Length: 121
Image 1 (cartoon, rainbow, N blue to C red):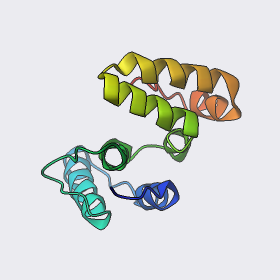
Image 2 (image 1 turned 90 degrees about the horizontal axis):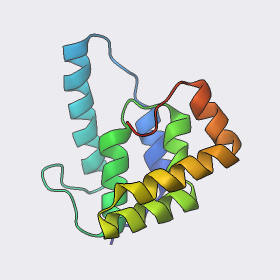
Image 3 (image 1 turned 30 degrees about the vertical axis):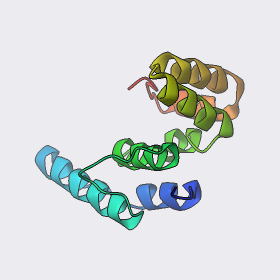
Image 4 (image 1 turned 135 degrees about the vertical axis):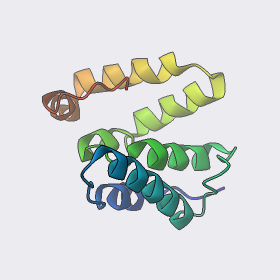
């Protein structure tokens, strides 16, 4: 099992500058995702099967290019727990419900809403 250090993962993801141009952006994003996955000893070709590695893999795969407040959401214990439950039950609604409840309760939710982010996407 890979130990999760979300601080270093989020720092690595947010520390990457966004390129310009749609095609360049897509190619750059793909290269960046592969580079980060390798940096955290994850095989870019095959998603891992254990939860800790899946969590890191998903954070890298879907977090590149996303605003830091959104990535900070996935650092929260409540969200990690809901992600685990959703993963084990193969039921996205669990994560969606927990995310909505968290965002309605904490200041981070205001930051995410102020950025106009649709968390379902």
